Image: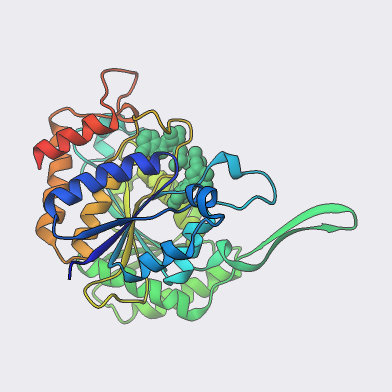
Length: 356
Ligand code: NAD
Ligand code: MN
């Protein structure tokens, strides 16, 4: 029986870039079963839930999820169902705690970056972000009134096993790379960070061949634009990882360039279960115009091949095809500084298909 891939385009440009990724993936892996389902605002519209049962059931029988993005300003009204709860729901349902965001410069795009090219040569880092705990999930989380004054609370909490397991992911990855882990926290102010730093250091003792350094998050944000080549694996908790990886993405020229893979403890009988998505959101400002950059989505399909299908040849072919299209001059609008000829999402994907 063919392996199933759940295709979850979601909202906004999620739809456009997922179509591009699917085109590329199908060309190499026509043997898989691709099943599409609604998530996010699209699902609220049709099923009154951002993550309908039918979508969840499809995810459960799939080896991997090819995800676009969710979110729509139409649901920003207080009390409204939030499309973003779909991604939170998936993370919880599959305990998807380890979010990997490889940040690599595609040579030719250095001009699109806000940094000088000499700071970018050889840029190759991996953000390992915890995604099931911390500030985004901790309870209490609510708005309330205190003596007639509006107030709100979020809770940042980490438990030892949550830190241990994400730290292990980072150290294991470092072994296949340059053997260096930078753990990011804010231990001078936050109790969660003090626990984080202590537990990461403990786990690090099991990996004497990997060098561990600790950085405060504000320093890490500074170092990322001062000297990005110094980083190999950047390990961090949920909120810091969210922010730092958007910053890191811009080093490569656009938020639209970056793919990601997220893993949990659960395994599919036929492969490593994972969720694959570009790191960007639904980009309401350009949605529906056919101009979104599909690189992050296409590279997410490459990660899907590498990690869930153990198909390194297809992963490499996809990555090389994107690099070749860029080398041949293909650019979407976000990658052209100061205006100039740009390709739409489909035309850019045509170039990738040709290179494939
Ligand atoms: P965004 O990432 O959607 O967009 C930020 C900026 O980057 C915009 O100017 C956008 O045009 C540009 N951009 C992003 N991806 C691009 C691409 N592929 N090609 C060209 N330009 C691109 O962030 P936002 O505007 O802050 O959020 C929009 C919505 O997306 C919100 O509802 C938010 O909650 C949601 N969101 C969803 C996810 C997710 O599904 N995982 C992640 C982040 C944000
Ligand atoms: Mn984000």
